[in-house]
Image 1 (cartoon, rainbow, N blue to C red):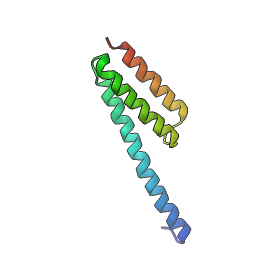
Image 2: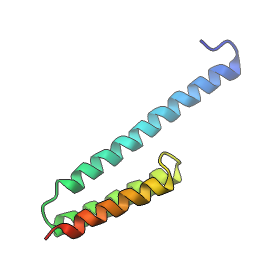
Image 3: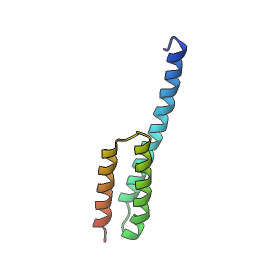
Image 4: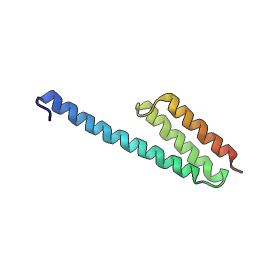
Length: 84
């Protein structure tokens, strides 16, 4: 339990950040699943651009690291290219 004002503030901030980061990670997982569930390139192309947008935003906000975002983008693009 926080004993002074700065500790209370830190607890408030960390809770808010944790919730924000969880929301962003959840959105990433949802967009990834949506992309992987697509059956054709026509469906996958808008889903891919949406996933890219969410990944870039998460990287800017330091929720995920840049290399992790690049790796996920590459895998998603490989999946879309494998569709016929």
